[in-house]
Length: 134
Image 1 (cartoon, rainbow, N blue to C red):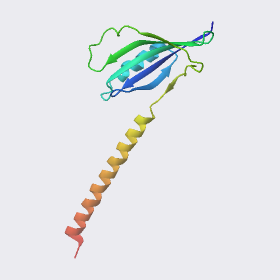
Image 2 (cartoon, helix red, strand yellow; image 1 turned 90 degrees about the horizontal axis):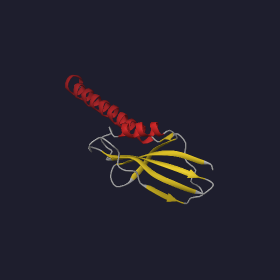
Image 3 (cartoon, rainbow, N blue to C red; image 1 turned 30 degrees about the vertical axis):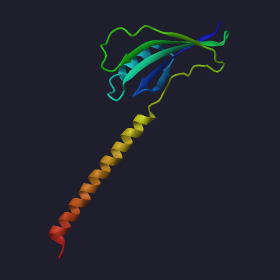
């Protein structure tokens, strides 16, 4: 019987869960989930274990970590199981989605540099008007 296991790290900022990353290693996924809890914009984080059995053509989904921001740290909530039948449920391997964070920082950088440049131009115009304009 061929089985493959993957661990999805999901987060939520409101009511909708978003897949942050997918791993083959349980410990790495749990570490990433705990690290994401430090992000002040996230409301909750969870890790879902997906076991795909290609002979039976089914996926068993189980939540192994589920923690909300600000909740008392301790044992994760009890695991839930759900079976689904899906022919294309091959697990994703080791990818991490962090492009939105990079874009956010680039936008902040561009706006900061633009603001500094605008202040410098205004200062130069003021000095030219005060001392150089006759």
